[in-house]
Length: 90
Image (cartoon, rainbow, N blue to C red; front, side, top):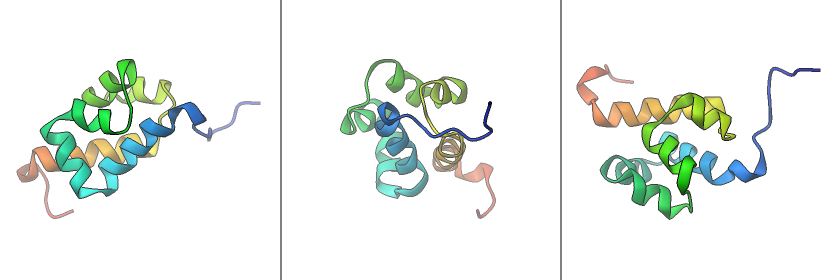
């Protein structure tokens, strides 16, 4: 039976933690915007996951076990930080 919702695998915890930080933690988000590789390294994220996180590549992140909501919100908040004039008060 295919399910609509999937639970992220335990191996993807660091990746989901990073995405949650991008969504919710102003200080972590600022560090990520300034240096994505260093921010990923803080959480032990390396290799393909680091590359996908740096690019905020939705499809790759989800394939690696990232929760789609965290991918969406994390990328949105990073974009808001990088391009504040592109958004009205959110």
